[in-house]
Length: 234
Image (tube, rainbow, N blue to C red; front, top):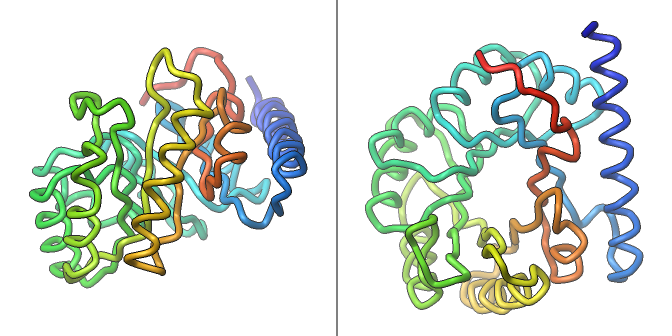
């Protein structure tokens, strides 16, 4: 596939995603400017990220540190905000703190401590979101809803990190709108205690509209942008 053909593919995907966002915003009575689109480029090459950037995408999400750190290096010079959205092992905090602008998957106190220490060490401030396990099962990543307020407070006072808000994935087998409504309630509790923590990271390719209807501020979209083709794995 030529670069021109791939650019056309991605441009078409981006146009469709933007049309879906616009429609969902109209239905919810919201402005498009309230939402940040994060292009999730996991398993796709840095060349796709460069094409996305050329099309005006400014936020890129990655799930795995090894792939993300290499892609950040390959895309050096591009004015991008890098989001780490996958489950994060504590021993990867040093690497992730070196490049991630936003970490969406903070779900335990040890990770708060590790990210704080590494952010201070490298002289960066990292925005962190508390990942919420909406099904109450932290095995798939995320803190139990009852533990979210304490984690948010830990982030709010830790040096080198900034509490941005909350993130969640709709549980398997549940209607996404119901799940995101619960997330919205949790987000409001956190925002009441920490007025600057206004991020709600929710919604992916299959449930963007439900997320937008329930106050999402950040959408994490991969398949709808980059397609279901066989990914190019480095």
